[in-house]
Image (cartoon, rainbow, N blue to C red):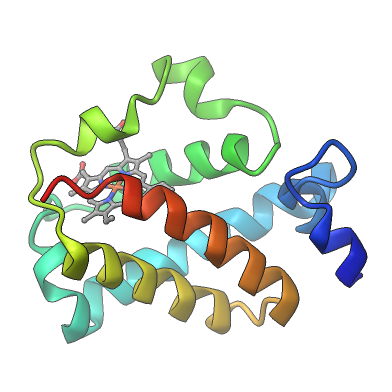
Length: 139
Ligand code: HEM
């Protein structure tokens, strides 16, 4: 399993495949995203980034789900619907500093634990997502 995980992101095994691929990958990502926003919505540690979001998180839930399915190597749901994500540009209206980045990662890692994700997969996925979260920083 570890070797397969080390290959994640290469042509050999994508994160989407490691999460269950066609049969299960989207279900796992949906559950992860639900847990992620549930943590953001309720954990006081994430209150500053929660406040940047709309009161109703359903659109954020749907968009992050669609984005992550494609980003992990599954069908490009977000791009098919909304075009190129231009994620950094879309995040420019929000003041994202190191603390905001770390709150986002905190919610994601909590969500991964709540989902009982395999440790090695969790570490790899968190590492890759940290790169994206750090790229969102605009201050
Ligand atoms: C670094 C800290 C981050 C903060 C504070 C943040 C905050 C936000 C906020 C406030 C929105 C608008 C949501 C709404 O409509 O209410 C948003 C949208 C979104 N974020 Fe983030 N975000 C962060 C990192 C990330 C990362 C790492 C990803 C992807 C891995 C991501 C993916 C998205 C997507 C796909 C959307 C929807 C974009 C759209 O189509 O409008 N964000 N984010």
